[in-house]
Amino acid sequence: MRTAVLTEIESLEVREVDMPQCKPGEVLIKSAACAICKTDTKMFHSGHRDLRLPRVLGHEIAGTIVEVGKGVTKFKKGDRVQIAPGLPCGSCPFCLKGISNMCDNMSIIGFHCDGGFSQYMSIPANGVQNGCINEIPEPLSFEEAALAEPLACCINAQELCHIKLGDVVVIFGAGPIGHLHVQLSRLFGASEVILIENAPQRIAFSKNIEVDYLINSTEVDPAQAVKERTDGLGADVVIPACSAPQVPIQGIEMLKKRGRIVFFSGLPHGYENISIDHNLIHYKEIQIFGAYGCTSEQNRQAIRMLATKRINVGYLITHRISLDRLIEGFELIDSHNAMEVVVTVF
View 1 (tube, one colour):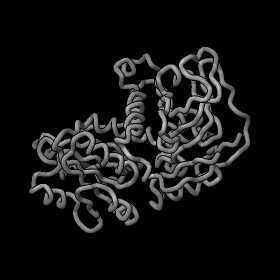
View 2: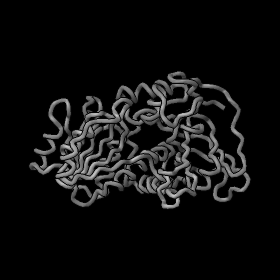
View 3: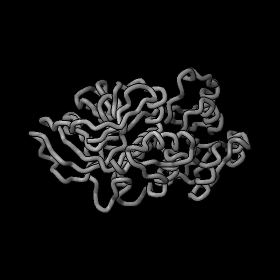
View 4: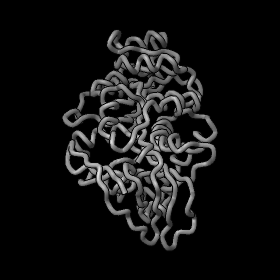
């Protein structure tokens, strides 16, 4: 089979290798679509705390089951499936509480074990046992189903910050994640959604979507613009869907009293210890949440939302590429010249 292996930082090889064996308790799938996450480009350029090399990247995966291992009864050959990439242990205190993304013994497809940028891939037994395989209902396409994982991450963040009816929600970043947050905020009851972006390509793309107010942060102070838009009150919720170090600071500044901010994106190395106004948080009773990844159940929620057309991801898929063009796909993402890039030819 053909597979793309990251052998070292910025060294990617498309190779012919043997197909993985389907061991007892495992499931073997044929990849049909694997979307490129911004985290994939980060790992290509600079690694990741959870990355183990050499590695096949890719964690936004959909495909068809071609073999089930001994003892697997829930799935069968021919099933169309989406994969939740977090592989929880199922028995630690966090798994038992239903927050498997916080699992003490978590491993991740595309980080700790080989991912979806490959013709075939095996799903480890703990993933099969702990709900990481989700059937794709008709007529949802493989490409759309592959985007269930990023949508599930957005669901996790918005559940944490409790978006409710009538909220004014501000989203930093008009990439694919920002667009998913816009739609999801509407679904959860936001009365107004404000989108902030500085890249010209993404500003142009975002003018065609249903957003109440689009702010170009290269032209105005975003915090001041939000306060003016809200008659001086500020936003109920702020979601930074980008990794710019100044954004959490600006986000806190634009919140109203008792506002909520959820740190969806990690910050670049060297910027972990940004300076935040403690007294502003104290006197305004601002609530801060962290959000990392998603649970298997949130992946199932995402699949249901996509299948019932409550969330639209089709318009976000701007490029479909072959495995041979994976580095080109990384470049498209990094340059903001694409929204979602999906590998569909393996």
